[in-house]
Amino acid sequence: MKILSIDTSSKICSVAVLEDTNVIIEKNIDDSLTHSQKLMPMVDSILKELNMKLTDFDLFSCSVGPGSFTGVRIGVSTVKAFCDVTNIPTTSVSSLESLAYNTLNSNIENEVNIVCSLIDAKNDNVYCGIFKKETNYFTQLEDLYAKNINEVLDILTKYSSSPILFVGDGAVFYKDLILEKFSNSLFVENELNKQTSVSIGIAGFNKYNNGFYGDSNSLSPLYLRKSQAERALEGEN
Image (tube, rainbow, N blue to C red; front, top):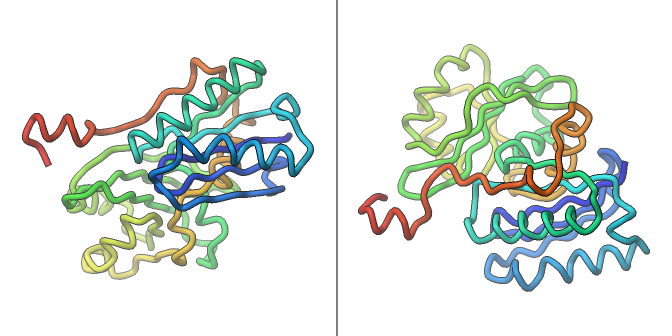
């Protein structure tokens, strides 16, 4: 299965092509201000490099957030257009789920089976996803949410009988606080805390094989909280 995978939910604009779970090519641009200008040229460059057309793919996989409100909209609207033009199915993957898939490439012991993805949402808040590691995929244990980091750590207490593996920029930012609460916590290497299209594609492949796919109507942004402008108008942090 040939997969075109896109992630614009963070400051990194990322595009990858995979054959099942094997990476054929990946391109990343770390410039959050130009996703709208860089995404389509990146896709076009990859297609030319591989001598492929959009219609050569079997699946489009897209990050739907949470993350940058503008970035998520750019990625989702682009993949929606691809689906409408080609009638190729798509899978929507949360950025928190994709971060869990990053841990498959870590050197952490195999017996760790609880992964907590954390994305910094500013003002002591994080986007959080809690997943259980299966053989080569992850199952979601809790609803995805945006909460204060201390509330998240309280929720994680019920999973703390064994080490929890943390991933994401929120895990990096709050590492000391996490270790105060759970001294046996584990953390991935720095590069694996970044969101990329490769993990979006691998997660999408697994979701497709389990029947979780659709057309362009199945894609919609996952925000979890109000935009900064909306929060400012309502006097929230």
